[in-house]
Length: 409
Image 1 (cartoon, rainbow, N blue to C red):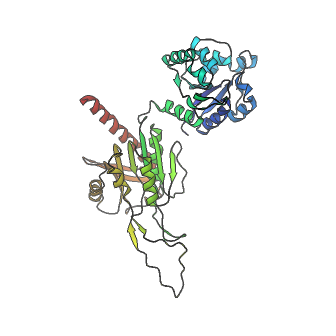
Image 2: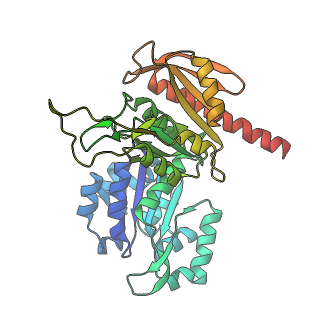
Image 3: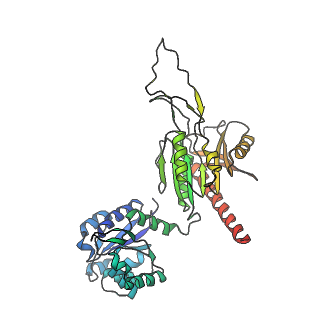
């Protein structure tokens, strides 16, 4: 949940787009946000206070002159206790009130009394949006630091087509998440992470696989998301939940994983933590292979699977700035890992010795970070701590590279 613990004051103003605010409210809460709502008189013409209260699980505030509200909460506390004030939809009227500093109702008074960041999602008729007065009001608000989300173009409820549609709830939620992540070290970076095993079918019920649990790859995806990166996780079959705040794509085979990775490019960071099966059956049976006393065991012809790490590291146009692979070794760890580093064309290798202890499925890991210049041994630690340490190394990599670019640019 990317918004866990964040307090958002959602102001719903008048307009047909108010119905979208209910879905927006649901999605904000799904991301862990605590949402209080102000419903304007205009907004209440399109959605009911009961529906807003049911979804927010909190009282809905509507009246500036409510003795109960002013005694228990008050517009001052409403405006100050939020981490962010989000106006969606923001009508032309409320935008004008904000631009001129009017305090005519609870919504406009709360906005005027606030010292918190404000984001608005405008929604109105295209002619209203293009009107010179609205354009000047928007320019005024932007100069004051108000953040705009949309509007988008399309067919309106009135039948006209043009710019003025409120942005879709999922896009507003993304903008809110980005707002809270803007000061995080990997904000603005995109990451691709692979995790878990692949299952290569022998027949419809049997497969070639391995013992990878996906715990380390999933922990890395979560750590990068916590650091502000937009993460796409390509996961093979695992028995652990998808990490929160991460776009997760489920696959079965190496071929499917490669295709999903190619579709996820370009990215700034690629971490191939999946234990991809090296081989697959050339001609998997369409029906279950039968066994019996008079039936000989089937001869399986294996062919090599695609090398996903090398494919990403050698991509001619979409190679990530930092490509990291994993090496699970049972002997000659450093020698084999360095050979893999050169062969795959990646930047770093995370190596561990899976022959010494039960690493697959365990809660802890003991790894070595190997680059072209040096090697670091990381003592045995939880896979979550290993993931956080890797996130710090990645952050330092980009900070140092960007510093060098600025210094020489």
